Length: 398
Image (cartoon, rainbow, N blue to C red; front, side, top):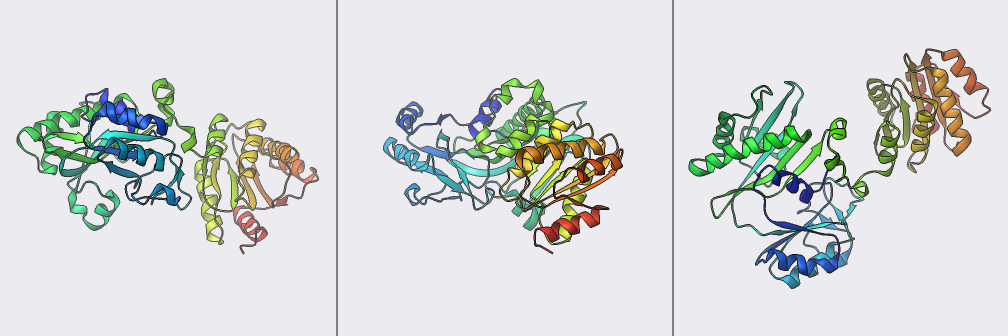
């Protein structure tokens, strides 16, 4: 689960992390009061969407101006102008894709006099089963570009969960960023604060880009992006309350209500599979035969008829879907349960696109019998290769 920058900074502030003062702005009429509350003389007006590259982004609407999704204002009047231009407009960045995202929230923040910019992030290193720090002197830019063109500028290390963050970890961060004296001490303190926040809140990723040195000689987190481990959200109702469903795909929200593992993609073939590995293989073979998957959907090993029905409805609700491939290997999951769920969903929502079903495993004969006797135009497949070829051909991609 992702949250907005202003929410992320509020979480970090609980742990003493240095961030700028700011006020969220949800209505244009609140802009003037927010600007006066901060006092100026320099304000930063930031679009709040779940995507990076906001500063370099462009709004679709001409009336939004051409200054991007992050703007510097030097008067209360300019703050009000920028807020009225940006709220409700569609911002397109490198991460949103051409469709962009509507800006429904802004964050008004104190301006900062910046001397240096760095990059710092924490994430789960699955190769070591530890929390890892990634730091670089190249802040304020895409870290992917740094990794590709200047990998020597990136320093990474992990922390033993038994000991937690120790002073030498902070010194490693300071050395990597070329900090000494009081700034090195600040880096040591910040390292411990960020690690504490990461662990306490069950984060999956915490990115500070940029981490800056101000003209007053202070380290400050100028931006913050946080994502949380969804499997641990039951422990953090205060984090769940921050969820902004307008930033999420409606189909993914519906899937989460039924405990389905669903991720929307941009292709034309909807997939319903049991098991993450088989789902990935199904997506791969669809691409191999020249088409694109419209989703990742794992119904799980213990899916019920109702869950399968819900999954089928979610797939058919996607207007991009031109065909559907159901690929089930029945171990714990029984093929007849899948068949009953699919037929129940077809009866309820209709079948306007080609449907290929491949069943194998527990109760496979019964599952095939249910589908064969349903009276619907369902294309049967013998194996995964056969199924992929048939659905790709059915949607005219072969």
